[in-house]
Image (cartoon, rainbow, N blue to C red; front, top):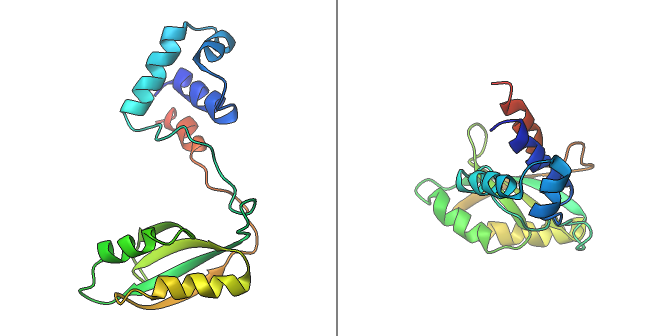
Length: 154
């Protein structure tokens, strides 16, 4: 990646509906250059999607929690992940080191509804137990764009 790639990423992140022609006008480069750079960023896996970013809160799910799951020996992480992927309120899950075996970020309609979500998660026989931490406020939302700028330093 170079400075033009980072500038393109920033521009399309800030204005995802801008279009290639308008991006080329604003950046002062040929339309073909913008399209080629975007194609390269997608092909290399740097850009992974162009869809809208959604707000769980605006969709009616203002409660965010993190579940630390302990998986029964021999149950397998993949089977648990397949179960979790069927629960809409599970936004992401990671196999981890340290205390616990997997982290899941979940959302719920309320603190009371969070119990329903936890019960759904725990319905899999491969999960022995869970501990839950409820998020009170988002200090830094999920972000990756600063990494694009930092990649220029290396």
